Length: 81
Image (spheres, one colour):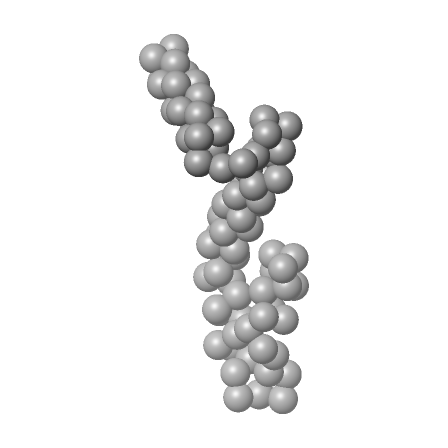
């Protein structure tokens, strides 16, 4: 990131903090709960998206065999959730 992009990121983050302050009853010390939840959801989405081709490949390979597994079980094996 160059200096201009960092400055824009800082501006966007402060704007988001201002919106939290204005539109919720959260105190500044309570922002962590929703923000960390959103960060985790983004992390989980990225991890699943990267593992999805392998999950679907294994699911289709095992489909109709005695070793068939639900897709959720394969996803847990491949990406942990």
